[in-house]
Length: 534
Image (cartoon, rainbow, N blue to C red; front, side, top):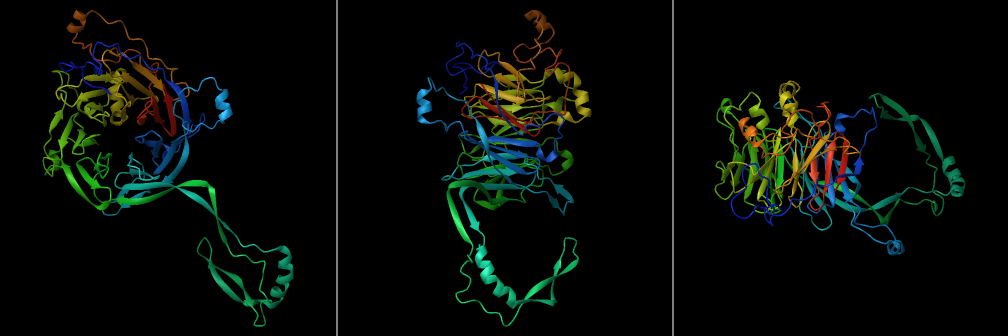
């Protein structure tokens, strides 16, 4: 777990020190390898819009993984490497059984949301899954929350034993013996017809059999006739998803975040202007705890972009804004948390403001580190790591795609500058990761003195695109004369980019998640789910 070094706080831009102290050698860079891919598309295959992945989330144990797509579906995966399928004899013959990296298999999927239409506002509500969050497990059942733009749903996923229903069964010999008497006694009434609607709504007449009054069952009936029987197969099970709660009609704007509380009883949902607090068991009532909507909408200067509960303290949460600030609030202060306890915001250097400054400063995602001491935020150009005890400046800043800075005008013209990239931390807090364009994602070391800054591609060969070697830095005096800060990692020289000069803004890696206990990253490239381990 990352923690501040003993003594004075870390300097601005300096990486976070480990608990052992800043004198320890930095951790070596991880070597990432391809693990698995689900939904890989063939070359030239056209991807359907509804199949594009829009959310990824591991549960707290790492045993389960959930993804959501733009078609409103939730797909679940379960870990399989923990169950070794080899026999005892095979294990005894093996010289060494080393630790295996996590591997997953498809478990089940279900339709979480359907497209809707708001008739009061004449607005179509997409079925796209915006966020997924795993809840506290109960017995052997798994619970998770999923949300689209307006409605949150609580799902329960359980294993059920398979049942089979046997159909009617008549012995062929009995049909010939007993069926003749029945057939002879049944006369088709040519005048009797029953209307039936066809697929196009037109009534079609069909003949119905007429039983003669002289018909009589044979003595003892038809012994070969069996009633349907339900057979329980105890060895086979299947996962079944049931919607337990629907939390609706609480947001006037699009929901961008949901987050579970550490008390396992409540969660929050956030839209552009409000944050609501819910009890999981109560779906018809929520409490508004943050409201930044001004009396006059013309006075609106910022919106809420992300919100997250503290991992340990049930009364503390953080939310980010489009102005690049993060506010920490304490729900014990008042019912409506209109005043923040802490404000994390980096001041702009004089003369650095431009037309794009406020756009690229907008924070798209925030994550608490496991212990809650640090907050990781992602804006358009950088990752920033904040210490909750130091509000004025982040303890580390990582440049994700600095080579795109000269192309901000082009990014603005094609709306790519408004893309919302997610970020994640490793379980031990030693590393951070986020996505970029051309299906690339970057992994940075967050410990003191670490120079780790890996660039990987979401493909079966993640290391085939290597970041260009930055030019040799000049002297410290020359750097100071140019106003250059050399305490920030990432490529300072925008020159060659990460993709050999080719920018593919349509292939963007927006969503990724880090396994809570292992060095395993799951990331979404269009409709494909890639996994990498180190």
